[in-house]
Length: 100
Image (tube, rainbow, N blue to C red; front, top):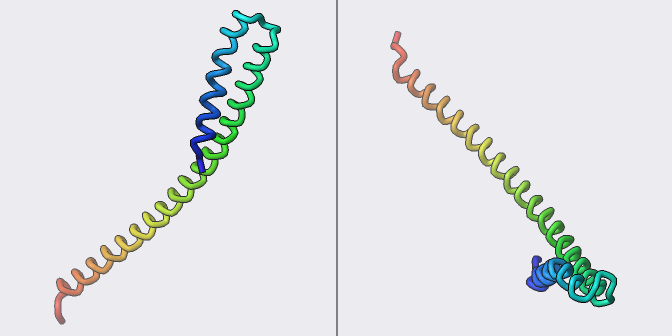
């Protein structure tokens, strides 16, 4: 699923993106090393974000499914509770009704 390599790639990419202004200041904005660091950082960060978005969608779907299942269980429990109350009321009425 969410593998360590993707997390490391995202972290490395984000680090390179954050480092780009420092490299730019040291080597010059138009230098090849600045462009390489910026490009690699953007690429790795973008891949990490894609994986994060994909996983977020999967987790969201899973949570939605669990929530739906819990709602159904809650409805079933509510129905059973209502039936139990009705049974108790019926049995109470039978025991307290006067004999003719």
